[in-house]
Length: 272
Image 1 (tube, rainbow, N blue to C red):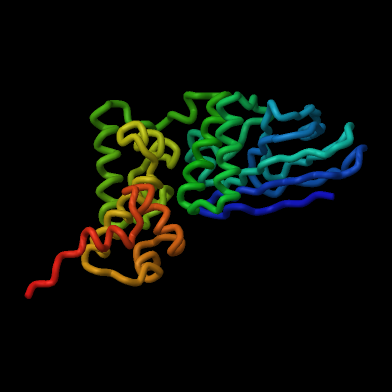
Image 2 (image 1 turned 120 degrees about the vertical axis):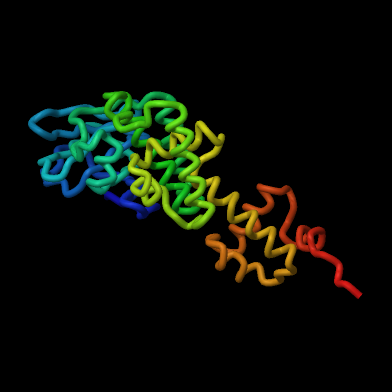
């Protein structure tokens, strides 16, 4: 039995939790239809592609390119579990120095990469906001590819500290005008890859683009609460939160207080 659960489909990135419980033996060959990096979480199997067979276990990830003839064999019982990250060609090219072709052969899954992979999966199962998951997935893919060719992922990166600071300031300005702008949209506007923007933004500000977006929304919510806003569901919808629970969670994380207590504390007394 092979089962898949799609956890994210956003901005050219699709994240899927894959569970395989097929019997031992030789699998059937088929043609791949998309670019993907697959991170193995448990089990062991053999993948044959481009006339080469590789034994894969949780210490490795592997790449798939469209049109590859591939076969999966299962020499051991017990099955396996993987996390698949599908990438649109344009997204892949932005991560990989303009080249929309993934490297052949397995990728090492370092302890850091493996931890980032599992943190992403946990966040996706908690149904964290799509923008945050998208940024986290791009960071994971970039880290995995950097183990093969670090320079390729850095191509196009602003060369000077001043240029990098200006890039981050431009991103902050764009988000201040429209917090709903996605990481991919920002990166395209600023003529830099999404991964490079994410990395530079975090280095300059101490938090991710997705977290910055939530902080801006939280501050807009404080203004509305101070003005006496009573309908939290309406407030959440107006400001781009997933729902009222998400609004309350973000506000509490940012301030340590609930929206109701903040409304009482921030509201101005009515003049008499």
